[in-house]
Image 1 (cartoon, rainbow, N blue to C red):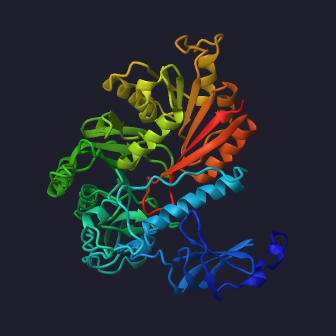
Image 2: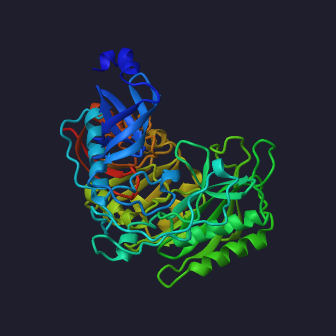
Image 3: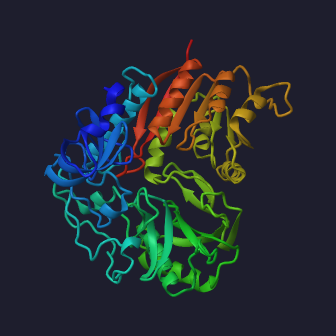
Length: 532
């Protein structure tokens, strides 16, 4: 089939053509997948099990894109999405599916990637470790809210009517609304985009695949305190206490902001991404946001503003790294206390798992796979602030963390101290360079507290792009006995497992953990052993 698609794809469909499709799968970005005469068609607004009438919007050599026109037959797994921004935002790509179906699709996606990219035959992938409370197949009813999301495309529209905080009022299967809602509000970090239009400021999230901003007064994934702070920023912009950066003229201060929340302590950090170290109208701005958080704080959710930081970024491209972090109020870090009793200090640039409740399940699975017996050396690579390695320090001989971000290494060493852990050491640098030197007796970086006769375990927790090939080769050259790979992208996980197989490591099994309810993202923990 693939041999002649290049010649015939344009003949199968034309742009603007209406076609009927049965949706059999879902892509990584949440589009439904159907096929017509062997041609894959990615359909926006469709989910597995649907039968749709769709309009072809774009044609490539090997596939085409379409948008749903009419839902001819709904999937049995469809539910009513409990968010008025769902169609505009696109952030929650699975919000129209029951939770059981979300987990099924995520697991299937991992298996498919391990087979196609990782070249594994029938890989063992355990059931997804989902959130504690489940959404039934018949979903739930949601409360009615005022208005709909506004984007820059409708900037002339009246924005006075916006959705208030979204409440779930009734569940179709009779379960308690509090249990339903506990599936959401799970994110402890939110990154907000800002813009100024003729109708006023926009504060929200970038529409998927676009630089348009969906103005959002509530997001079901965020804490209520997070949204209260974000809505306060909108009012601050409306009152002109802060100006939005204008890239065309290089003027203005605010380019966006990030809010971090610690569920274990209630501490919050607000990070303004701005063009200078000085926060305009600092006192008024900070008190306005703090008061907004206090107004929604409860005994169950006792959040408060602990730290305000400016992430200084003057680069034309906002993806360029910040040049400085300036603390303008409160402390340099915020502190979280986990369900298993550990304390972690988190600085502005530090990485921390976004789903605190599921993080405990994730780390428990890592410890189970690593299974240290008391004498092993555990190499925690891409260690961040040390959360994974420190969680198993009491069972290991020595934890060696390596991280390229200097601030994260400082955080990791401090976290070892505040948790009373003495068998952990952290190093700044690229793991593929640092790790071999630590084991090389002829190198000045060699450390004699690593017993060469004890087993070695490598924990890999890379970003979405996966591991650098040089790192995987370095890990193999150091002859670690066991690898536990923590991945947030099944595709790059499969790619790296294939290379590790070529380097002498056998895939044993994987367990997904749902850290990202209502989205296609999933965390996967994989276990590999050195082949005998």
